[in-house]
Length: 235
Image (cartoon, rainbow, N blue to C red):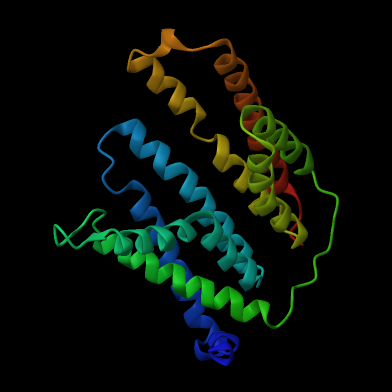
């Protein structure tokens, strides 16, 4: 079994790995927006996953196959494998039914999760890639994001949000890094508008307004940073 995992990446040519990565990325977008009937719900589901996919493909274009697949697994597919196992274990012998019904979409996501896990482990057995730190203009938005996550949620959230961004910076992809920051805040304007239109605008607290302002600020500096990164010469 261990030898199978170690040699898994050699079973699939690199070009096929790239095609599968694109297919899994596209499917992640479909799953994210599936069943969304409201405009704001659709937008709030579409934008973050689109930025994640863009970051993944940018990193893959730099031949960082391990990190590209690890990010797609970590940021989207990982939860679906656990969800599939929970659905299987929810079988009730008394009623002869699944309490949590495993859908076809869930099964496909679980298969995608298994593939990504095997591929990531196979690359890791070759050794952890060497990371090179370079000073980047993305560090300030990263710091602001970490502060926001810490005070709005927890230290664990700040860590989980920051790790993918730091990894992207360590492989020399500031564009992917800033997109991974933007995915957190890109829906804030639409969430705000949704509150206005659905009538819950007047029930917000002081903390809501403080963190909303902070989120808009981070989104603004992220957009400006993205423009600066795009103007930088290609490495």
